[in-house]
Amino acid sequence: MNGRAIDLAVVGGGLAGGLSALAVHRAHPEMQIALFEAGETLGGNHRWSWFGSDLDPAGAELLSLYRRTEWNQGYDVAFPGYQRTLGAGYRSLASSDFDETMRRELPPQAIRLRSRVSQLSPDGVTLESGERIAARVVVDCRDFEPSPHLRGGWQLFMGRHLRSREPHGLTRPIIMDARVHQHGAYRFVYTLPLSPDELFVEDTYYADSPELDRDALSQRIDRYCEAMGWRGETIGGETGVLPVITGGDFAAYHTGLGEPGIVRSGARAGFTHPLTSYTLPFAIANALELARHAHLPGDRIANLFDHRARDHWRATGFYRSLGRMLFDAARPEERYRVFGRFYRLREPLVERFYAGRSTAADRLRVLSGKPPVPVFAAIRALLGKGSPLVHERSQ
Image 1 (cartoon, rainbow, N blue to C red):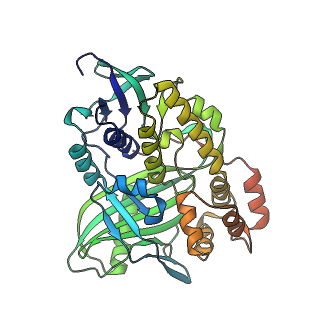
Image 2: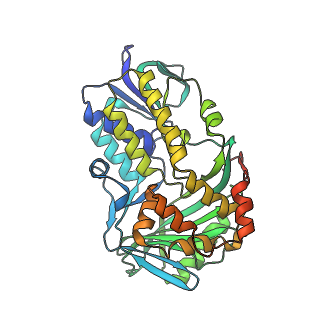
Image 3: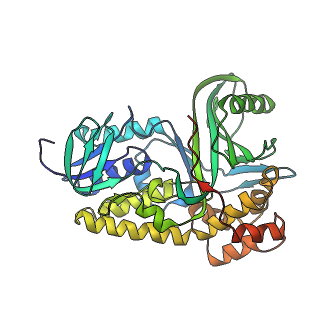
């Protein structure tokens, strides 16, 4: 970097940051890019999954560069008294494969690991080491931080990568198995058959508190695997705490992110699905949008992304309303009824819901009929504010 200003500084080497850097490099290989990540690898320790219908052809083409697992025979959901197989294809990407692809596709000098950024400004970044890197465009793709300006609950999860002693026999993902004890939250188990003898089993909770009890969740995964007849050795795993945003003052939240002129993308900028906490379709769309406008001055790109964030907030209001009903109208042990009723609806509606593209007819259909929560409780929830997202994350 020899003291000259680079074209693009991307801060945060997770999904949003990595995709942004890769999309810009592919579209503009002449540009000098730096991707700053505080950790030892890109992508951290995560697994991202999505439905085949979530992405347009350009998004699918960008993700085709990554080694991933695909299932094209549909997926299953299960609730007390009700099971269903849906036909959409499903995809999953491990962070180790994300890291490998990023190292292969980006110039080596573009990847700055163990480089924690202490300060961002529209014209560059400063590392904790004191090094200052001038940049024409600065993109903030760091993780979400809790804020008193936002309301909602939490999605907690623990995933285990298991190698079974013998073939497990599972051929399709189980996206939601809510036939489990709810433990004071909407709980379901999510299972991906990665190979004939490998499984990824994740225990997930829509909970009021971000407190994650690792020992308890590990024991519950043990019991679930035993009940399913899956025995073997653990070869990996992950835990996480994600926000489920049900409301708030987005303008105040966005203003609090920092000074204007910095391009903001990813979960910190609000580009999530408020109810599912999915980020991948929005990270892909933002990466491609950044690549289309990468030659513009940084302040113009920042302004464009500020408008995108506000538009996204407005467009996803329906999902925040459903989140308030989930957290504030349903008793924790009966929150599963909300999703159980949803999964009885037509499959195209379900696909558009997960992609964040529900139509007006979809929204009407979701809200029509006998509600899965008490009517007056639902009205109170919709009129209420919800709980502030200010809890500290569990360590």
